[in-house]
Image 1 (cartoon, rainbow, N blue to C red):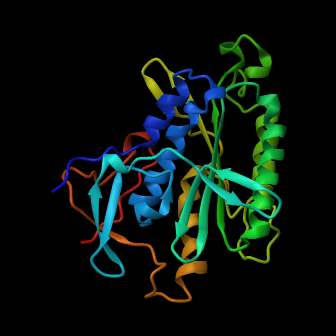
Image 2: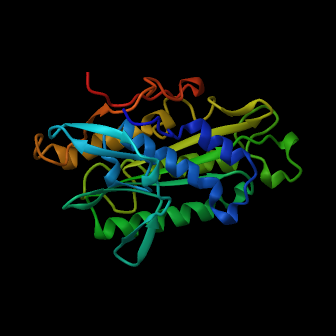
Length: 281
């Protein structure tokens, strides 16, 4: 059995967002990207060799659906993958590269902790990125995940840095942004407009004295962009586009046989967004 791996959780990503790391360095968001990559591997069943940025795992084949999973800290690499879009190259936050096919799934992971008036600019960037990539790869399953900090008007010195009012209700800018995100998602077939993402997720987090927490009162559970729906939609559309034509082919998502001890059966359970590794029985 190999050593215990470093499993990047949602809690770890939120800790980094709450730590006050300068956004210009992009270090504040890299842990979120690692969380997404880790989850695509462990829960999604994508071999770690396919997922960029590389996490501390390697794998080898038992059969087409079952793979051994090893802890390999030396494999870690925070570099992003540069994808040639229809207009220009773009460094994509998280990318799944299927051998022989190229980019098949990707996630753009962002966060906003203040200056919520700039959400319009963020939306413009998201539209451009999505359209650019889909022009070249219309079959790519693309997800946009945005984490927004809960900040009440009474907690911030600048009103523009507030996202919720004194009654814990989202301010108009946040409500409008939710509605725009809803309109931006839901792409199901490769003939749907390339400016839309296959999956969009919105998550509101809090930074408290006892650590990061989830603000689970917004968006409402029935919202199509509720975070709980995000990853499963990516998996479902990947299976439809890349697994369904050949259910026994090499592109299918794998089941893991861990070659290390102490892999949790339930991850992020404390944040009420539990997910489970895709394990062989």
